[in-house]
Length: 204
Image 1: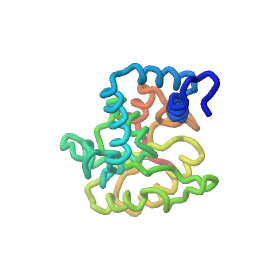
Image 2: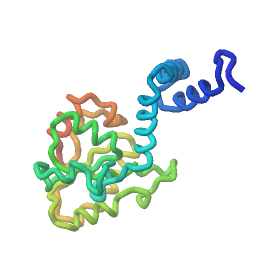
Image 3: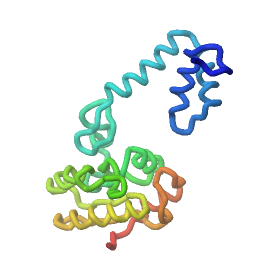
């Protein structure tokens, strides 16, 4: 049964799917659906195909966990990156935010979340063992903890610090230009860039 304001159940279905995306309301979803409806068929098929391939063919880097088209991502494969420094982040969004600052030239390690007992996320649910394996290789000299400054982020950073101390590496954290409780993806590039460039020793 289609909505009274629509003339087509197919249109309503498209609006429903578009409106399920974060930050997209039904008015915007309707505008997008009508735009696609007015596009040439081959353009819409190409658009839809890109989304299907994104979900079915995307891979995760075997080293850092970043999304990639190959077994290792372009950052890990780039010989110009400083391979002795690894920045530990919660998600891909944080990598993109840091890369946009242009202030960091090392490697990354994506945890895939942060420790949050209330959400049922413990250390075993994160890519902590993989980080330990990388540190055991002996090439890494510094680990930068660039996690959110929320209570969960601080808890995760402390847990990682306790795990990392068994290796001969320096542990640093981003400077406090990022306010308590802030997520990195919502921090402006200038502030985040300065926080990365002016990182300091981690003090638990």
